[in-house]
Length: 435
Ligand SMILES: [Zn+2]
Ligand SMILES: [Zn+2]
Image 1 (cartoon, rainbow, N blue to C red):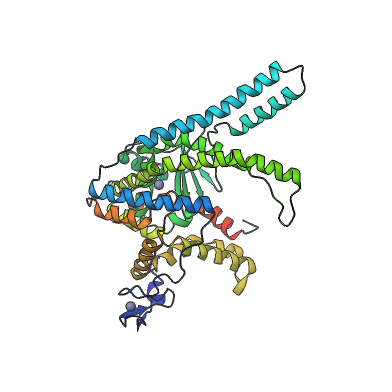
Image 2 (cartoon, helix red, strand yellow):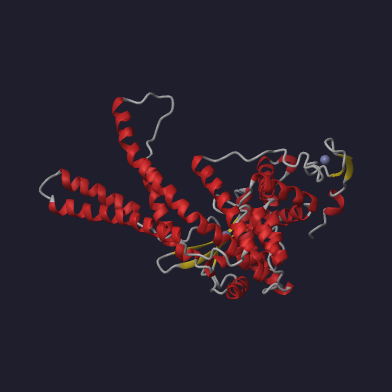
């Protein structure tokens, strides 16, 4: 099925570059650009920055990503975990939780000892509520779509188990499926159970071996102990963000603040900036660790899926925006019934069409996207190292054969197990009222 459109849609003619005159193949579906002089390589320009915090985080992530890339290129075993900033981050995290504990103890004491006064139990109750809100939370199983248990998808779980044991860890307890152009692993519940999140937006445009590489990357995070290390710090960061939420005054635009409002805002400014500073410090202290973890997880991807598959996965990450916008277009067309499109029909074969579109993206467009990624510093999110550097490290490593290969029979069985979830999520994408 894949590549069906290539012959029809891939008709290209040549034109010459207005900047250097070199011959440039032209394909009307993609940006015209010149490989010789980079003319028009990035007509869209950099993406807008989402907020000061995110912008700062991204800048730091890029800097650390570049440093680590250079270190790991020189010595693949360099910068193994557990440096001084990691220890300091854990100390800060413990201190954050200690503040919550102090609030709880203080609240209880005020209520118990000040029982005969009115004010003290009241303040105590407020402190107790704050402590409850700020307590470390061991995440629940969060999902936007279907949850598959082992009994629902034995062959998928068998693949996950195989990949897990190849990278030196064990499998997962739940698999969640939604439309994201992403995949991730997380820990949930007090017993630290594992959940693998598969976003079909990404999964469906990968070939079998790239899927193995993706699973290798995700499970590699467990093998490297990232989740364990992340838990103490992750819960502390969540508490800090809750602090920030409560300390940020709600402002109604276009209305002058009253004097008492201005005074309370001023009063909240000091603790807010303090919390903000601690949050930044903790993010900063852990960012290097996170980046290293991503590079090591990529190594796991290479080991199980092969270097070619891991590099292919990096390329596929670059077409995320166009895959997502094509899905949105399908949804809009179906809902407005443009050209007689029907919601139910649009949900049928949604993922197949997405895979077909992705399969017709020519190598030349990938080359352009790789250059844009290097120019803009594309990364999957605010904590991942730049994608082009990840790809470069993957290609610079020892070429190795795949440790796990999906045979066609297993691939078909896994597709059949995922079929109901694919349908449910496709309907959610199109938002078919009957779905
Ligand atoms: Zn040119
Ligand atoms: Zn990762």
